[in-house]
Structure formats: C-alpha cells, structure tokens
Length: 199
Image (cartoon, rainbow, N blue to C red):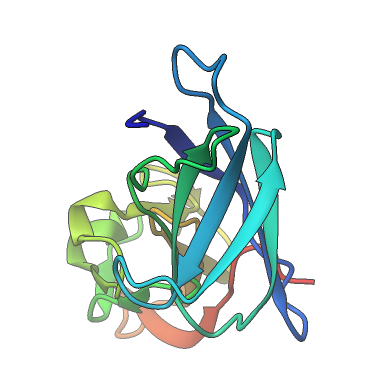
C-alpha cells in the first residue's frame, strides 16, 4: 500500500524531566482502506528506534523523549492485512536554541533635546543554529528600529526563532548619557537563551 501522508508537528515538548511531542497529519486519499497509523521516531535521519501505533487516529504523541536531543519522526499507514505504507516525509523536532552573535558597540547621536533614534541593530547580527539555515531564522528587535529613545538607559532585545520554534534572546543596554560627550553608546549586557514551551 503506497500512500503519501502529509504531516506536521503541532505541539512540541513540555521541557521538564522528559519531553512529549504531539503530531497530527492528513489521511491519505483515498483512505477507506486504512486501518491505522504508526509514528516512528529516532535521533538520526531515517533511523528510527521506536514506534507508537495510534490506531485509526490522525494524531498521536510520543512521550519520554530526552529534551536535550533532536528527534526525527515519520508516519506510516497500514491496512487490515497489516500491509504498511512507506514512511512519510520526515519531521524534525529540534530543541537547541539559535546562537546570536551581537553587533559591536553602536554609537547613537542624540538630537539637541538629548533623544536618539533606535537603529536597525539586526544588520550587525549573525545567528547560527544546528537545525535551521540562517535564512530560515526569524530575527526581530525590541524596540523596533526608528523608535525615539529618551531614557537614560534602555534594554533592547534581539530575538531569534528557528524553524522548530526554539527561541534565543540577547539583551543590549542602550546608554543615552553622552559617552564620550555628544555620543551615545550601545553595549552588550547579557545573553539569555530560552527554549520553546518551557515550564
């Protein structure tokens, strides 16, 4: 029985002692001969060390996963004669957050009232990730470029989210006191890495 399944990871893990990944998929067309589905999983590409039979449901969960590892999943369908389809396209659940390399200090020039305009600090950012290529990592900054800065000190954030939803943040302090006189400096304060769906 050769049928194609379209799958998607809907919910990733609750990262406590073990992780649970929930997956749902569309049934093959036609699906009148399908008796059930199996979810295969493992820590290497197309190398599955476990499976879960979810019966005739088009969703299921795999629990007891190590939240520090990357997992690969595939779905198969089977009929009443226990003939099984080929594996679906592989899904990957990755739990490592991207790594953000922040820009060097940025000099902001205040106006006569002592205000400065927030630059686009993403232009100086590079991001690496063990799962997504850099073009598939969503980058954003808070506050947005163009925001007027009037406070003596403001914490800005660079946020990177990879295709698996893993999130990393890097915080920058924007000092609006002239240093040297007439200039403002942006300095790296700290880096915080967060993982998706932490509790």
